[in-house]
Length: 294
Image (cartoon, rainbow, N blue to C red):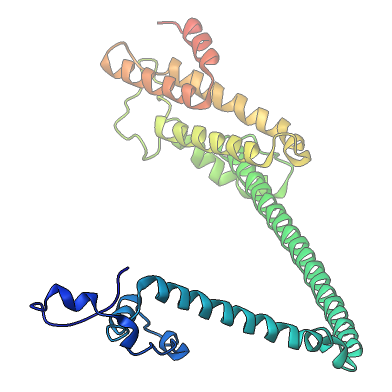
């Protein structure tokens, strides 16, 4: 059996055969040795160097100490068990306080729900107002487009000399129409380099004609943006159709007055065909070319 012992290394073997009954009895292990926060088993065992005790005796002593500690813990729990059970009933008035807290919590819940309902109602109201604002803005934009549409129709009617002569605006713009007519047929400043044709007629001003085509195309784009089924657009359709017919007639005239054969005639013919294409009237261009006498 191993025992803790210390001595010189040169001691004779007979020293180990001495009767251990004369050795001092080891003192019981102290509980305080295990309460240190930095308790280390190796350090603890090394501190037992002066204990003349076998390892098995040390294990037995540690087991006994463990059993004592477990018994003390169990006695402590049993001793205070009734106090733990009576702790709830010892709080007098606790149920009333809990009920008061519960009522207050329910009241707070109702207040929060009321505020939440008000916020949701306000959100829906604001959303409705924003939708109404967007609709009003859209209607205002449509109104501006319709006013612009009417102004452009009237302007084209005056430029093409198809305005109603009985209207005050038609009489007031008579001079402008005369100027437009002279510009269209080459007597203005737009095409001062155009010469008269062989029959003495003046060629059509392509620059002025191009302006008319562009204004008509922009007119159709407004109608598409507003909606071609809009009542106002439908009401103006006869006037727009007359404008279109007049512009196509001017394009046909421009083809017929392209001038004598040559590079200049070809260039003017291609320019007129491009205007047909800008209007999306390729069919009308083909028909005009078939009827053209070259």
